[in-house]
Length: 121
Image 1 (cartoon, rainbow, N blue to C red):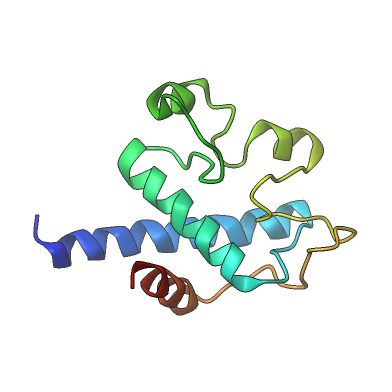
Image 2: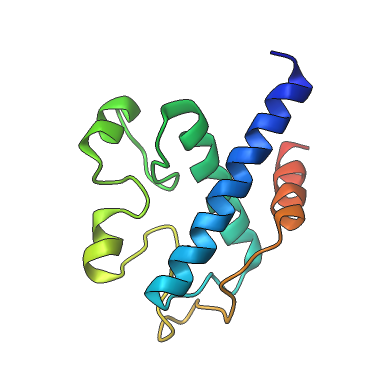
């Protein structure tokens, strides 16, 4: 696979994760972080894990064995703490009373890509 095809494939997964995050935030009445770059980095991390591991494993934690963690499903987004108590370690899905909660449930795909590019430079 060429780099262009690889980038195109990743962008498809990235867009799918973006749409998932937006829909999940709306469905759960949660909001993205008031610092949009946090949201962008988390969605990028989820999409990388979705692409490489087959599941959107939480990108904000350290794992000894990512494959085993994916199989256990506990930290696959939305993780168990989020589903059960609306506690998002990544600060992707925040309740309105959280100090870091913004007002947005949407994020621009191009902004996520810009943040990704700025991190790789």
